[in-house]
Length: 514
Image (cartoon, one colour):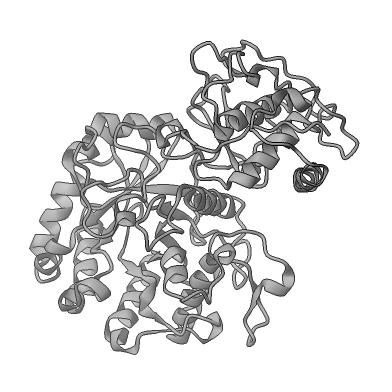
């Protein structure tokens, strides 16, 4: 194999180069409905530059997002959603809960103003009464079920109860002893609320709204929960978590928490109330104490979550029973209080630019906004220097990439960094492989983007059809018998001699990419 050394690492591709994302399908996931599974998004508004309702809806439509949850019942946004067919969950904010829970008339007025005034033009399908009331607003807990009943009565009066469900989102922290799931039960303190609440959900054909955050479970576990288990990454059978009572195997935190909720309901003798996850996600940025809040983990979690939901896998306790989920959330919210991670759960920045591109191969989805099919492969920000170098050497050797544009004096030599050169080589291989699944990974140091990384006179393969001659992927598939790409010593620009042992070391490291 030819050794193509491309020296110093300084990855400069910015978050703005990351692109998207995401085709979220219609169809719902309730076991009690005839619809299929869906993935929706939450729309938070704690942004210093909140997009207009028209811009929000344009983004939803461009990304084929068909289910959204609002944290209130914003009139302007509900009007903008009219005629789109997008299924909307509106919410009674916690600060209005006491008034509605104590007055049937107040509840009726709320429904008239925020629901009846907008349907059928706006497709409102659910009302979330409060948010995590038991854990964040316990003084309102005694009126929670009353508020739900009053809201439902107003829907009955308007003949909307069959199309609009009423529920209330709960934090998964109300579940005690959540692993093994079969031993889980709700905090007994809340039995006077949970029992009538579950009776209400059962009698109205509604569902339990549950917020599931494996990120927090992982962070609070003191390294007991492996990161791969939190991120839905594949686990060998001996690493799966086994419920000793049921012998059910769990490969991810999400399923374990959902099943814990099912078992907790069973503990109260409710076995036919389905679950919809109203919030789940992973932050893409954190402070120094939140190193696992990063782009790669956020991308991995949400990509795997979407595939898991849309594949209708269900959970070990209820295989094949979909658990539809709303991703938290549509936008990064820069004015949210708290640590850095609190501001960085979004799929998009406020200008509509995607924070990262989701890996959805195999989930039956495509890049909704990539109408030109122009995608590129780039070096991942912060990637390990040695791994980048080895991947670059492999691409320019066994990968059969033409790396001659990276020679000193050629169009793509500048900027003279290993990250920049690796991006060119990675993308060349990705295009040669016809963008086939797995061709932009390089042991985790590369990712796909829809932003063209071409610069100046350096035109990347795949850019507008220029410099891009795609060939059959099987011809260029990595092979242990691959010969040098012809770049060899011509590309070595670091000072110092290259000993035989160094070359052997690079050869061995590069083999991991075969």
